View 1 (cartoon, one colour):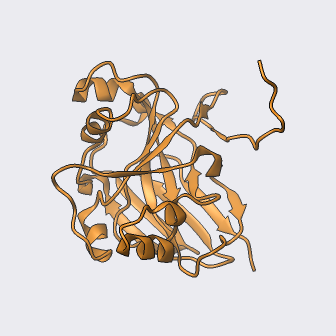
View 2 (cartoon, rainbow, N blue to C red):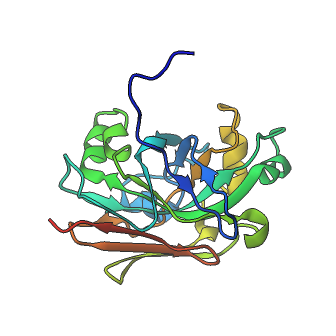
Length: 231
């Protein structure tokens, strides 16, 4: 076996409520425009024919409670509060039942976004990577096992910046359900343990600046927190 020339930074392991062992991050898939009100505030319409996705690097993930610097290359850094679905085993077949059986748990997450770069690339029909896949751009709270939380229904999803409300909606507003997302995505990837699916953000996204404190939550799950270092 060939030895590595150098060591890479460790990818974080997400804590699991009530467990000593954590959830290792494999791949991160993100669903775009999965709340109609958010799509409208971004000046676009929901594609009701099928979901669409972008990806984020596991190496750029951080855990809830981190303090990070305002990112390079942007003047319009946005918060996006999301429900994340953690896959615990391969899907045995493409069906809602198999999709539910493959889910290990759920958690709160932040999809931090360089909005100016995302929009400038979108206008030119280019990939969103510069806007979406940035250092500390995915933030994960501890996971709760699926059996301990229950089905996705009308749980409240919210976010504050410096204790001021920014986002407030319910999971009933998801355009594509968790089962529909997993069934569709599994037609393109062999979903496996370690995969995370960020299911989209509700309306109310907006900018944050150095020194801001971000906190988000979903009923019954542990809150996610991120602080931006003062300039």
